[in-house]
Amino acid sequence: MTSLSVGTATKLRPATLADVVAMEVLMAPFVASGDLLPRSNYDLCRHIKEYVVAETPDGSLVGTGSLKVYSTALAEIAGLAVRDDQQGRGVGKALVEALLVDARALGLNEVFGLTRKPLFFMRLGFRVVEKEQFPLKVWADCARCPRQHACDEVAVALTL
Image 1 (cartoon, rainbow, N blue to C red):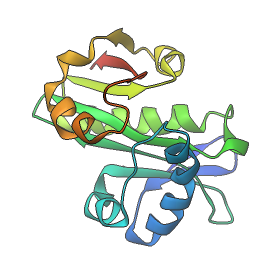
Image 2 (image 1 turned 180 degrees about the vertical axis):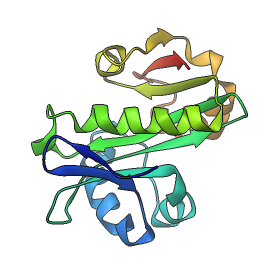
Image 3 (image 1 turned 180 degrees about the horizontal axis):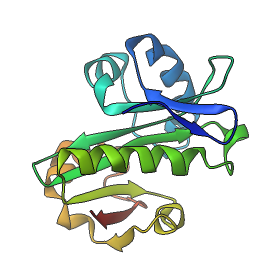
């Protein structure tokens, strides 16, 4: 992914290891609210190449998201977080669109997400689907989620 501007000030770029601590801070309120699964420093470091970040001119991270590849045909948009004071400014949309560009470049057929904000994804062309369509996700993440027996997330998918 090359750098991409959002509005006039914020730019998107691939995440680097130097971003990990700021990514943890950015994600923390969303983990606390249950909107994101916790991701350890080790996990973020190990999967750093999956992440894109949104950065202001002063170097502050205001958004992040990742593309988790499950197979030659399927990936998940995960870890999507935009700082509260930046929401509604197109940062989340730009992050998702950048991840979709990456997904298309990889030759994937479909991208999905599990979210408590399905309308955000539906505005980007995703459709609501059944979680059971994604057994690899359920096996990989849902089994360790504290909300697995009372899940309130909606599965969304986009055919590329």
